[in-house]
Image (cartoon, rainbow over all chains, first blue to last red; front, side, top):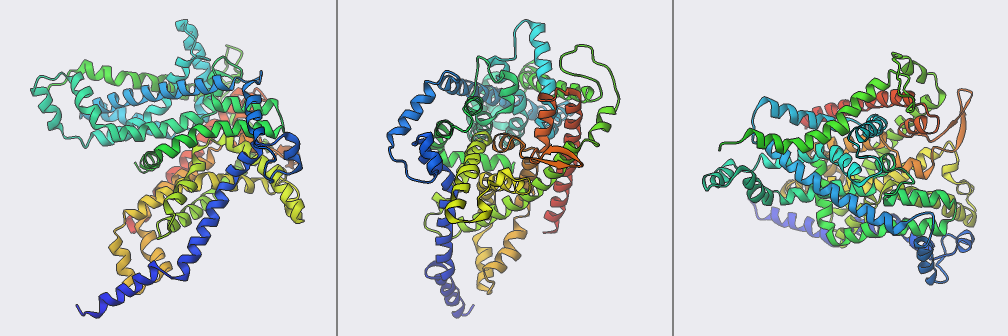
Length: 300
Length: 296
């Protein structure tokens, strides 16, 4: 190879790195796009710190008094029509409980399916996977009816309860979770589990002490994909819990609030702000995992 | 290793049971109810054959919902993927703050459609109109979500804002898996930026396009939350000489047929059609993309 070529290559790379006008345009353009993407968040924050009158007067101005933000938040917490704090606690309970059962039971199921290479295990796996195409709209009304029938039959109501909705989330969430875990478990060498058995480890202990620790990175993907969906989900809680039931979630509380305070943007936007804060804070701390989890979940 | 069958059965049971109770049984019931006069209240349900299906295709609202759902899906697939791909090119370049940009573009995706719908309703109805008045631009003086001819486009803007960052991250992962030496070699051979993207990047990202097109297609087609809180189906307009709701997408039409009109069986029949169309569309898309992947 002649000596000239690397020099030419270097020159071009140098131009790309430093002063190309294209890069400067990209730098400025991306910054503007980024700011544009952030505008809706800024508008929520600004208008959460205003009175209803101030918003009508100008929805884009800087708030006159940031203390109003605290007053709006207090107004929402003290509001008799929605128990915002209660909805937050319920959302946490439902999301955490659903994630725990989805992760544990999906891993158990996926492991049992992978380690039995038989026709029936493939059939069960295919049933789980092909059901992912069923849209929620087809099953939602019969589901409510069926939950009512089942609840009446066992004398243990499923509608309007924590265990009812967690059970529903297990049913809806396990297909994709089993699919993701199945793919990963296939790559775990059998020898590892065989060695444990030879050492006298029972089948159940092998799963909990050998397999579960290996699944950790995949669990992150499963937890994040399901967690974001469950936390933001609206229709399933609406149908299972009802819009005025004992148990409420954040999306239900926000719609109930916005429905009863039509056009009172000071309070509606503050409630939106309160609904966004937990998830944005979580994102700031676990950004890397969240992005990785959501991208890997999609690619698989 | 000797496995005990009953332990495996026990391991499979919780998921299989929940899956059957939550998806399989309601799915079967749903198809059955679509062919009955089920009204949600009367416990006696009579078989009516396909008459629920015949009725919906002469109903102006359903036809319109069907058409705008197709249009909304088409617009979104184009918008979200172009913006997502463009952003991916920008944030995989040499920009100084690329990690902050990535996070910023991604974050709208984490907020649910319900909350975003209210925020954007405020933006269109108040901020946009306020700006229109201040700047004296007639087009902006009437909220874009209160006009039948612009409302679908306005919803697509919100959907693009919400979803493009997620699609961007899938493209970013795909771009980063392409060895840098390939792009460098092309660069050395004198290919400019656009040639490199067109001739090397896009063909090498074929499998990413299968995923992103599938996600944008199915998500737009199934859109409900955003539709519900941003426009609630409005504004009203006339279609086939009947008053209809101009932004009522199919998922919402199904919901309202059941909840507002109490026509449970008809809603269920619409849902079955919705399911069939969705399956046909997504299978066709995946089939076409997979063929492209093999060519590339």
